Image 1 (cartoon, rainbow, N blue to C red):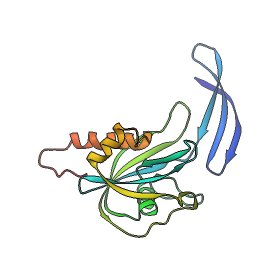
Image 2 (cartoon, helix red, strand yellow):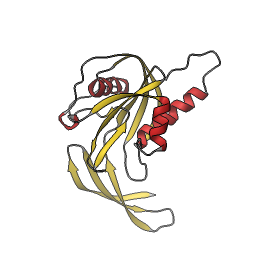
Image 3 (tube, one colour):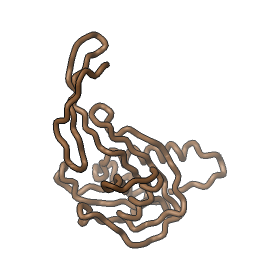
Length: 185
């Protein structure tokens, strides 16, 4: 597929939407709408056979939603993917991690968006103050055991796609551990 032209359709501080005119391999033409958003970090904070989750109102869904801590840099801020993960964890939960291990890099929705994210496992957690943004003022965090998380998934109370993908990466990571290595989370 080849892009023949592109135009910006919409922009705000968090998102840009463009429309690309394309020519497919068979010579037919078409239009693609592409959502451009910055990459984000997602953290799986694990301790005591469970995880720390955050819950907040998600406007597009019209309801509150549970998920793992995640986010992007505030406009003007920048750093490494690991620094972003540490910043989001502290901002949303107040937790600081002694250990942070990269579990994977994923595409959010490659059929419509450029956004990607890194998944991190945080261990050795120490509590501290949160530093939530104005848009996160209603956020709360809570600890759930892994058994409780599985029930939340089955009952449709934990539905965030990136969080579920992160949990899948954690399960894959655990299945690849060598015998005798410590199990985290």
